[in-house]
Image (cartoon, rainbow, N blue to C red):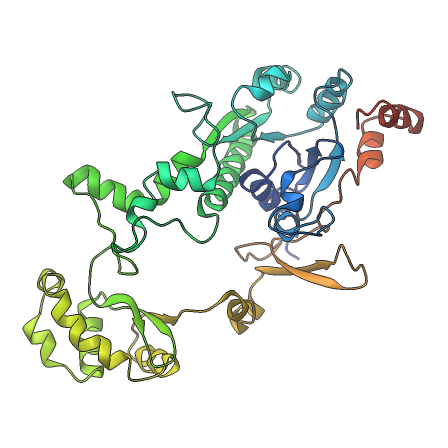
Length: 399
């Protein structure tokens, strides 16, 4: 029988993070078996509990998906009695993750050096906008600001409308995956060496790495990319979003065989002889578009998806999120999971969970996202606090 233990079974992670990047990073680890204990400010909690949703009663959809599988306690980190609780938690932990503004957690007394003294082999990850060092390290940062400062917006958008940010939190979510990878690597290194590690994950660094192809092209050629709308960064006129008779379809014909097959399908096979090389086609983009765009607009998206698919040309319809959620492909994946509806316990809601499949021991949601302070008694009890102690901590507004 295969061993069904997950990668992080038996490991404990103390999660001081809020909003998106930090919580989604630790959520990934929770789905791989880690006991993630989320620490939140009493009464207020993670601001994502109310983000993008009114009347959510502290359990907004974005919070639900970013905090799957965790336990949660409340703790006023500025209270003198918080230090002992944090120290007991860290003594029992394998990793700590925080995303305060650089320097803040050190002032609270819970920086890397302070906690390393308690747990010498601790893996300690800090997630911030610009990193823990450098002239911008103390600047506040959210996703949109990093999209702007990283150059991401300068290469996104149409020439007519100017720089454009993505329609989702691209930097937050990619930073989360970057952080989860770094923490996983540090935990594996600890398994090999017995040593902990200090990890510094920057949203800005992540955003630049996400643009590695474009940035490297600039560094080597000293050529800045242009705003190209939905065109491929390759500038190929046969890789773009095209209007169909009933919507839009993304076509990516980059290989020479695909370009030739596309022209043939559209009834303009001789166009390949006229423009036989990528550089020539790029130079004559307007002439090519003047022919292929009307041809593509004459048939439905479904028609082109079918015909292009037969030729092996990568293509896809532009789907809305409701269409994506109903996509039969996901019946065979693990990307969505159902959890109890916080507002209606007898019902369930579907949220996004893992982005990969593995066998044996696939990613698994161990428990639904926690309500504020849901696990105060259980976690503190595990740390050796009596019911009387916990009642006093509650009365003193420590938790």
